[in-house]
Image 1 (cartoon, rainbow, N blue to C red):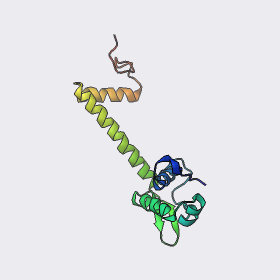
Image 2 (cartoon, rainbow, N blue to C red):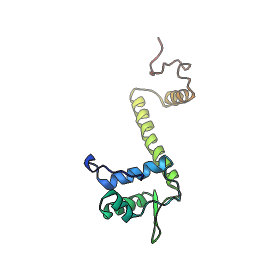
Image 3 (cartoon, rainbow, N blue to C red):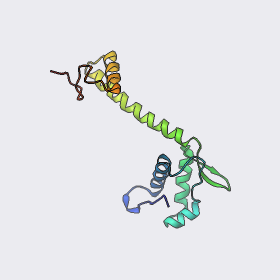
Length: 138
């Protein structure tokens, strides 16, 4: 079984199940279109309330990670991988925005920031006259 919630972790069981489903999709253990365990059998196996599994599945459906098909069960959404990419890019955008804000606060111009990012991506930070730590060479 893919799912192993830890009741003593302090994190609600339904949230643990949600994270474990997402992790299984990210690692390829669950693929788009694949069926998840039924709510009742999963609850019995994990010795938890079926409503807990139902809540996790409903939340995952709301997030677009799975599809609940009446009478057929829960299936990994075909766009689950696309959603994962969108979430990853949204998180990355926040990191970039914070970095740009900090650099602007230090008086670095947008053009300098652009050159720094491009040099870092190209692995040429040393050739741009900067060390890997971002300071000027002396």
